[in-house]
Length: 430
Image 1 (cartoon, rainbow, N blue to C red):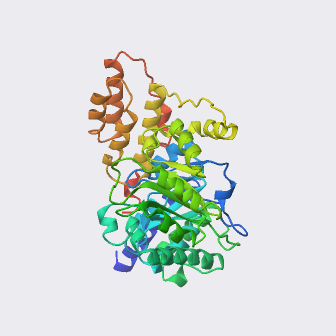
Image 2 (tube, helix red, strand yellow):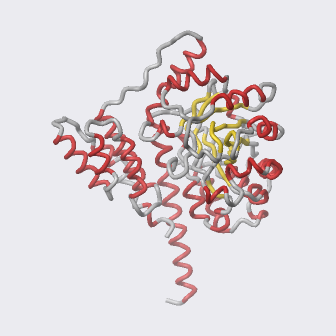
């Protein structure tokens, strides 16, 4: 076989692999965004908004799918994605921005420190059909903040504003018809996005819409500066600002300062920007209390949703309690051990088949979270963090049930749901 023929075969294999991933997700790349005018979903959700917070290394496509299916948050965010990935790691970008229709409204969260890159990636977010774009200005990780990204932007307000303006301009120019090719996006990435849109049934050449821009941030860098920082963000007329009630210096230590979040609500009272709170919300009762105390337009749940997608089932109770103003009892969803294990297996199968990650290791932390309140939880969690594939997981759960004398039927449907129509996702982009 000559070199030209070999290259041609390689191209055909790459296209075929991409076709397989698109059919696998059956509408993962959304259909509902390209319409006339503005698409500010934030204004259409009954208050308070109760959504799933973006969490690095946690809220991947499988976690979000399971949470949407079994919980139903008002809004869902992707993990934050580095704007540089569009040019240096496009396969990673496509993996991290995969989503399911069940997640809508779904928001792409991106981070970085170069306004020009936000401008370009805003086009990609629009091209992939997201309902909104969120800019991460709250990550406290040293590897992020050291480069001037994440929560470090609190110290550079002019740069923060430039980033917001560039992202918004990117959305405007997308709406007005600018193509990915005109931006210098690699043809391979542009072709994959275009191909995905066509297979998903989106009218790529139809009229495009403006999607809302939001920011997730913190109350300060090394001290609380919520008054000054909020004035900076409000000047950009954002659709929403989510405040985590800690500074960058605190990381995730200490208590979230909801008094500072309440002050942000007061500052934003006469603006069109919604204020959401985040931090130390462990159950629906805490959600109800914090909304009443601060008057926030909504909240995002993070760690409370780990291994617990069912927490969002109580959102309508919370909203009713707040509307009535009475002391309505809010019941945390009761989930039996059999249902918990069934969803655990469904999540594991989804991760194994959909994540495009070769190793099952990334699933282990989720398994431990699911087992947190189970009888003999410590021993079970110790086993969960060592499993390497789905079959081993099933064996562990069966042995656990037998050891405790429990009658738990591990439904085959959770294990076989996808087997008839997909292959191992780890090889799709190789």
